[in-house]
Length: 239
Image 1: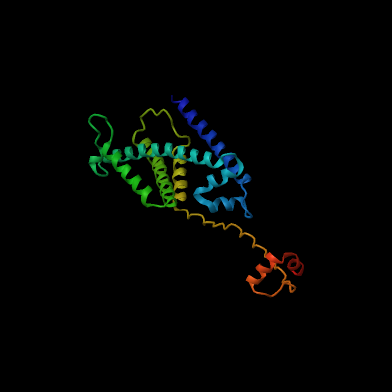
Image 2: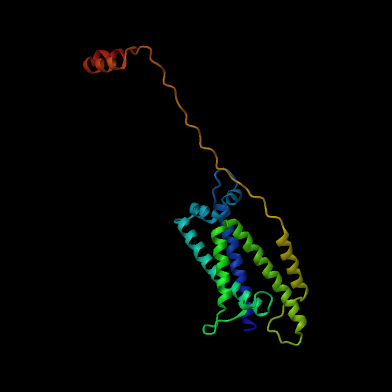
């Protein structure tokens, strides 16, 4: 496992990254921006980018992108709930927060209190916060989590140098420190400006003026209808 797990992580990371980059290139190249560059159009539709663009270049693109996004979010939500509850459990067990969060269920061996608290926080954020704020909050939390992982690795290597680690980060501790610096820069970097793309205005309808025929008899409407019905041939000639 020490060798296979390490290779499997890097190979899967590389395959997924290449697929994501290829999908992004296809989406940008195949999207019709309705008179504006495709990347501006994608930025303008924001969180609906995949759905709005997928329906343009593939059959049933709207449904496929919607279902795929829901499945991906379900998988990510499962991992997020699992990891957040375990983080709260570890913090409570180490007496860094409320200690009762670090108690396991006596029968099911699940951190019940930490799990319920995580669910309450996630449900409240999903109900009361806009989607853009939820995405920004999740980005900040993940950046902080990965930054602390690099610091924790350096600290563990210092506290337990005699331990036989199955995997050692190359160029340690410089590479983890570089990761800390990069994550800190990502956390404090200002967000990119929001591009609001307005669709082009529809063309104005052309109204053609109907010329007024001076030969039309200037008589009341009721009289015109009576003459057209009972004296049609002669009246139509004068019309």
